[in-house]
Amino acid sequence: MNIIVENLTKKYGNQRAVDNISFEVKTGEVLGFLGPNGAGKTTTMKMITCYMAPNDGDIKIGDLSIHENQNEIKKKIGYLPESNPLYYDMPVLEYLEFAARLQGVPDNKINERIAEMVALTGLNKEKHKKIGELSKGYKQRVGLAQAMIHDPEILILDEPTTGLDPNQIVEIRKLIKDLGKEKTVILSTHILPEVEATCDRILIINNGKIVADGTSEMLRKQAQGQEIIKVTIEGAAERDAIISALGELESVGMVDPVKDSEISFIINSKDGLSSRKPIFELCVKNKWVLTEMTPLETKLEDIFRELTTNCKGI
Image (tube, rainbow, N blue to C red; front, side, top):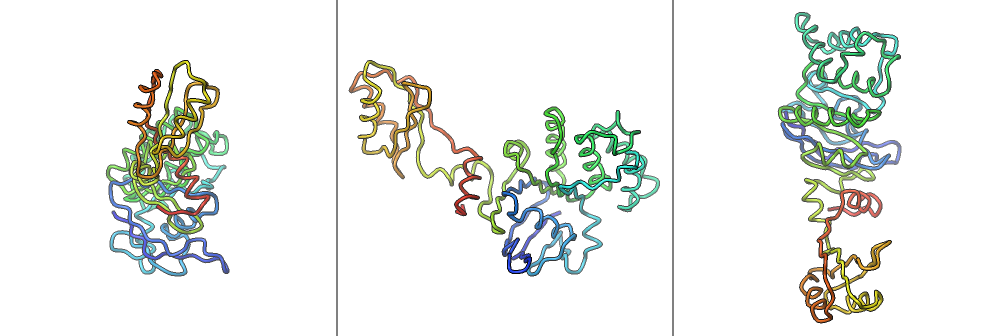
């Protein structure tokens, strides 16, 4: 089931927490929703789940508008909020039964759905405990289980791996990817490697506006304004002489020595130019031994920092 966000705006007084944003998430897609604290991520997710009304714009879940079909929309969504509100005095199984009934799961399907969720989220060893007795990681698993108990077509997950250990994180990532093959998933997280491991597409929001939208590969290519190369040169020449010679090449914009290395350098080419051939020819001319010439990709962390610090869009 597709999600279509159209010109969505949410104001708090004079502040626009979400500022006229539009995007679409398609069935079978896992969207990574990124942004710094206060960027508008959680506000957007609350509006998608009908927890909060926008000031302007619309959200359509399939053919249903949030302005007219809130009850129907809520049935189609599983939501794990960042705060993960749980009833700590309730045993796990009792709570999942309560969540299933709340979500309208038929009586004859409740036990089956509970068993499936316990198995999927790895709660079997802890299922008879009270929620308040669980570790943070297991509480997060209970939150995931309640979000999926009614087999929703859409999952909205706000920081779903918070508090999980590395093994649990791998399991939950795999679960989200598997669910994303047949459901529509929006995943908010601050853990950038998690986005690359889990999501098909990335949307970055900053100051209430969308500043980037695409796959991690697309964002890297669009952000890669210059060719960046790591070069290692072994030879008798002095390090300063190598730096000077590299810097004099017409295509080279900057030479940055690699920390703790006497023979490695990061070369930034000028826009639209490549330095690989000139560097090779320079080494041949000076009889320097070129042992490495490696193109460097822009990291997702660098893209995120650039977009959310300088407010530039891609």
